[in-house]
Length: 154
Image 1: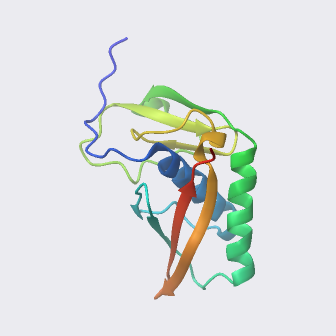
Image 2 (image 1 turned 90 degrees about the horizontal axis):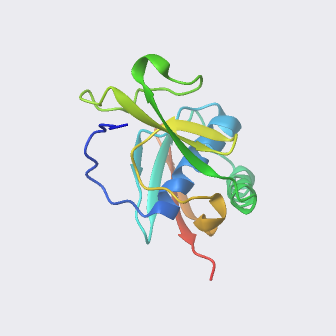
């Protein structure tokens, strides 16, 4: 099967990018927000923003980090499937796709926890992410920013 996907112009750090997927789903479940549309994922430090009506408490921030590390330790498999636009699985939104996105899409699943369309680099299982550490947060005009890093376990 010859699958045509869009060219990908990024070379993400797979552990941090996979953590982004888990973080998006954790924020959706904890705060009822949408997936982030504004993330800068790097090897040393990553930033991701969420639209929230109020700033999360320190206890909620600590719970985000705790939940992320719990998910990572579960060693959830990261799997892919290819679908056409008329065969999108339930729960997958296409609002982040570029207008010229290919007809065939790659769907990324992390266990039963998260599913989304993505052409980025990912780990094979969550344990490869390492330890998730929130280094700072900020809140400004409805935008909650999380700055994080992943520390690979040796």
